[in-house]
Image (spheres, rainbow, N blue to C red):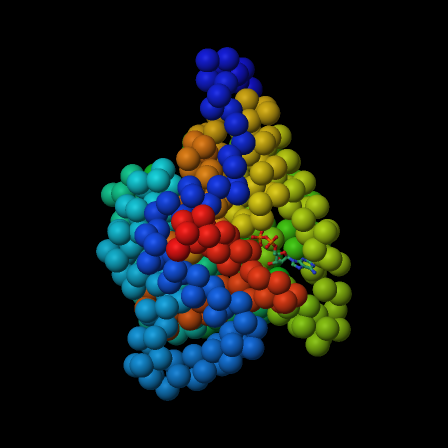
Length: 401
Ligand SMILES: Cc1cc2nc3c(=O)[nH]c(=O)nc-3n(C[C@H](O)[C@H](O)[C@H](O)COP(=O)(O)OP(=O)(O)OC[C@H]3O[C@@H](n4cnc5c(N)ncnc54)[C@H](O)[C@@H]3O)c2cc1C
C-alpha cells in the first residue's frame, strides 16, 4: 500500500463521469451530430431487428450496397477499420487523450481449417503490430475463431473425439500457444474472451494452462469471467488460489456477459438449469464483489474491469483512490468498447487511470455478429433513451448545436 502525498492531494479526486465536455472532447460538432443520428436509429428496437435481419441476408448474398451502408454508419462508430493499419488513426486519437487501445480482430465461430490458420496469422500480426506501438498493450482473441465450435462442445460433454477431431483440437491448442509465445516474447498481453457456457469449461482449462506457462514473471494471458453466471465469482476465487499456489499471476478480465438470452433459451430448450443469475441485481452484486476481490489481491491478480456500468467503474476508481494504490499500476485496468461510454474512458484517462478501448477491426463480414450485438445493446428495451443517446444529447445541448 502507498501513502498519499499531501502535495498531490488535489489529484486524488474521483473523475466526474457526468462531464460530457471531456467525454466528447475528441469529437467535432459534425461528428457529434452524426453520432447522435446513429444512436437515435439504434434506439428503435424494431428498426434494429429489421436492420439486423436484412443485413444478415444481404451479407450472405453479397450485396455491395448494404456493405457500403454498414461501413459508413455502424461500422464507423464501433470499429477501427478493416485492417490493422486502418486502426492507427483511432489508436493515435485515443493516445492523444491518454487512453490505450486493445486490438481485437472481429472473427468468431470459424470451422474451416484454412480460415482458422488465417485467424491465427491475424492474431500474430496484431501482436507484432501492438509491440511496435506504445499505446497498444494488449490484443484480444476469441478461441472460437481458432477451432470449430463442435470440437469444443464435444470435448466439454466428455465425448470421445475421433482421430481427425483430436488432430483438429491439437492444431487449435498449437495455434493459441504459438500466439501466446509470440506475445510473451514481445511483452504484449492477450485477453481471451469468454463465450457460451457449453464450450467455456474447455476454454477455461486451456487458458489456465496458458497462464501457468506464460504468467510467471509478468502478466501475458488473461481469462475472462462472465459475472452473469452464478458460478463465476467462486471460480474466480478458486482460480486465484490455484494460481497463488502454483506461482503464476492470474489475469482476470471481468465482464457481465454478452449471451444472456441465448444462454437462457438453450437451457430452456434442453431442459437444464440456466447458468445465468436470476436477475440483474445478482449479476451486479457478483460483478462488484469480484472487483473488490481482485483489488484485495492486486499483486497476484491482474484485473481488467471491462464494463460500461458507471457504478462498477466508480467503485473501482474509488477503491484505488481510497486505498492509495497507484492509478497506473499494471494490474489495475479499465476498458470500454470503441464507440461506447466515452464519458467513462475519457474521464478515467484524464484522471490518470489505466484505461483502454477495445478497437475491433476486420472485414465487414467478420465483424457483422459483433456489430449486431452492439446495435442490440443500444436499443431502448424499456422505452427509455439508451445511455449513450442521453449523454450525446446532453453534450449537444451544452455546445448549443
Ligand atoms: C471491453 C469489453 C470487453 C468485453 N468482452 C466480453 C467477453 O469476452 N465476453 C462476453 O460475454 N462479453 C464481453 N463484453 C460484453 C459484456 O459482457 C456486457 O454485455 C456489456 O459490457 C454490458 O455490461 P456492462 O457491464 O457494461 O453493464 P450493464 O449495462 O450495467 O449490464 C448489462 C449486462 O447485465 C447483465 N444482465 C442484464 N439483465 C440481466 C438479468 N435480468 N439477469 C442477469 N443479468 C442481467 C447482462 O450481462 C447484460 O449484458 C465485453 C465488454 C467490454 C466493455
